[in-house]
Picture 1 (cartoon, helix red, strand yellow):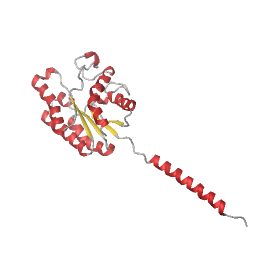
Picture 2 (cartoon, one colour; picture 1 turned 180 degrees about the vertical axis):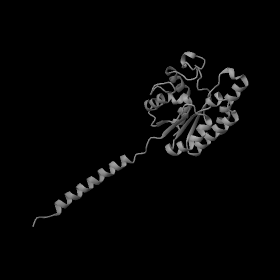
Picture 3 (cartoon, one colour; picture 1 turned 90 degrees about the vertical axis):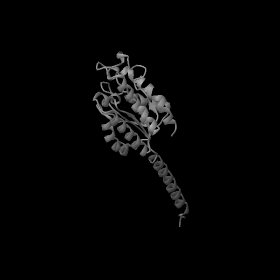
Picture 4 (cartoon, helix red, strand yellow; picture 1 turned 90 degrees about the horizontal axis):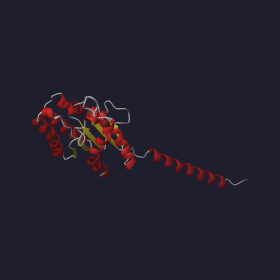
Length: 217
């Protein structure tokens, strides 16, 4: 009667090999997803008047990949949004995306609509606190209003971002349009929304404040 020992050994070796292969596949399948970088802004970050891929947020996603940072960028910016709108939308965004970093770029439409800056300040502070409470690092992006709003209002509007950033201990981009805000050639005909040519400048203004957050993970 032929021995069954050798065939059994071969079967056991084959089963062991399949088991190892399956474990390797499972390990790859369970690899952690890339952390999310969430941008919550208005038309400036939503890319009003620009083609797909031209917005500074798109340039940011490409720069992150080029620099070797493993993040998935989610642009949750909405044209026309205010700090109140962002505050209302943020909890669902935090639950859905569980971001590691949140960039908040809001407030310009509050000024355009004549909103009270105290309310805008409260909304921004609440958004920063909510993001921090969800475990995210936050970068606040400051906007500026045209000089025709008056010197006092302009100072108060600028100070609003600085006070929130200081109170919540988060980095701040003091002025999103720094370095080109008075160059009308870099704005669309409405003189509010930057052109495609200005998008690299927006990214350049954000990057120095954002980079330390990326590297501290």
